[in-house]
Image (cartoon, rainbow, N blue to C red; front, side, top):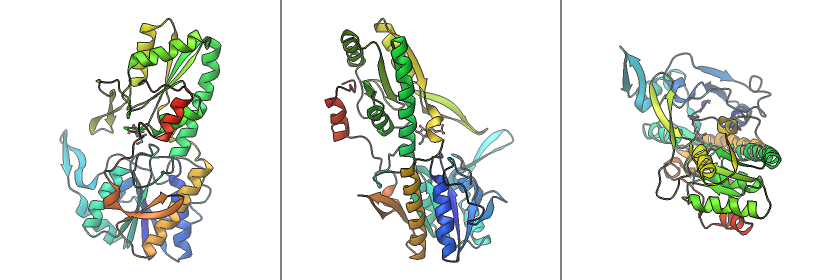
Length: 360
Ligand code: F6P
């Protein structure tokens, strides 16, 4: 049997652990494993496929990122290139099928978030034998209790909060930390709880600025001369819009991503209170670094289970974690269903019980 693996979309800690687990488990069956570089683009462009062995995938378990590379571009159904100064979009899905045939790839493992898994589903419907492995630091996929990468990101944000605490206290400042998470506040809530934040602002609970101000004032009155505010990038004030920044996606296009709400909140605090404010945007630091033990173990379990799915010819399925067990779900049922923080769930109410404000 010859199988291939690719990693698509934004990277996250634990991808290498999946690659290593897949190669080791498949090799034990006597299969050949090919690695596809840079996500689906590796099935469109030439010379982006290489043989993976336990030997050339050794020593990567603890390393962040993906040794195969990844890209947010390269959607085969909307593949963009520049021709004569113009952006041209083409459907290259047939090329993907040809490449799979040319390399005699009998099954494909797609490690990706919602976007890559949606592409995988379309390819599966065209006859590609594939299975999915979910990944994202945002932890916003409803089909799995948790994704690998999330725990590492939370720990990174928590460490940042620990560091901000000491300098906040020394200078009697309000420190705002903007964290990632897209339209889900999981990183903000969990890092905020673990890192002893005073205010946590998340997309699921549009905030009132006056409530944030009240909380900081109240702390100052009680003699706490500093405050820590965690803001999810997707948070927005009640009746207001999310904040976005325009980025260049390679040479081809500009696209908007969430960002900027941290400095808006910081400015609003400075405008209303006699408090010095500093804003930190943690950004892609949350995506890098060595995966935690939890993420290494989950990624390894996902990888070995993906190989089992192929062995059992259960194509179109994706591995997931449910109640501590590795289970599976149909990719088509997993995509497009986001999991967000329940505004009145235990995590939020427990945080509120210890005085953390969500700005409501
Ligand atoms: O989905 C993961 C994530 O890191 C989000 O939290 C963030 O909004 C986005 O990706 C950033 O994307 P990019 O790497 O394209 O800037």
